[in-house]
Amino acid sequence: MTTLVEELARKKCTPCEGGVAAMTDAQIEPMLKGLAGWQLDGLKIVKEFKFKDHYQAQAFSNAVMWNSHREDHHPDLHVGYNTVKVEYWTHAVGGLSENDFICAAKVDALLEG
Image (cartoon, rainbow, N blue to C red; front, top):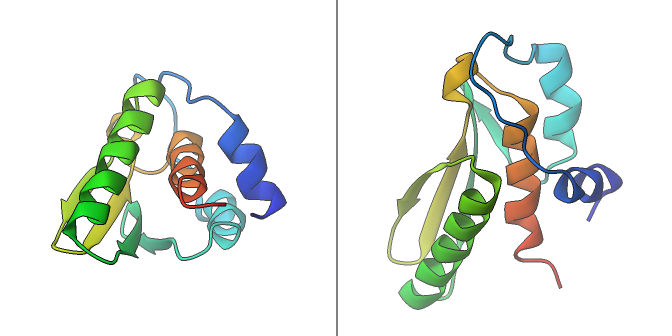
């Protein structure tokens, strides 16, 4: 796990109710470089995870949802037989916020160790 990911995973999401600007490309680029496999897709960051079977994909999805509940920041999840695609963006700012990167780091941390 990179230092950036470790730092982000220790943070807590802050409530975002709009009125705050979305991150700029200059802010997004270093954050994205620190998160392995995450890609920018329009206004979202996206990563697809592959698993041995459907049970593992579902278990991972449940863990992502639990993290989302605790952070009060929710992704779009697309679950297939053995894949889970996770998409984060902050609706209230119409783009990306630090919360998206915090949650992405926490998702990656689920598979560490």
